[in-house]
Image (cartoon, rainbow, N blue to C red; front, side, top):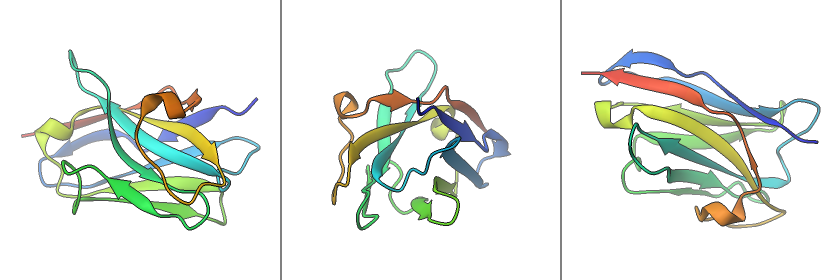
Length: 126
């Protein structure tokens, strides 16, 4: 059964950068929509970015647009999330999740995602 694993979280100063990766051991993520969600302490989980499977089209929420970039590493079969100009409000646990198969677009409705990683902590200090 496919299990998603996030990596790359850590502690960074405001204005810094981090790169997260989402992978599934023994599987490629290429056919699947992949979404990234985050949850700050005492806040509801929010979707921030997703990438479609066929054309790799991204969708970003306004809070991260222009600062975060999602991409597929076709060689590794992973999905990468490059985060720049990080702010303290970006802190939280970041999750990747698996969505539909062979889709040319994506959205961030949680019910559309059926597999979730355990998350990786991102902390941005001011």
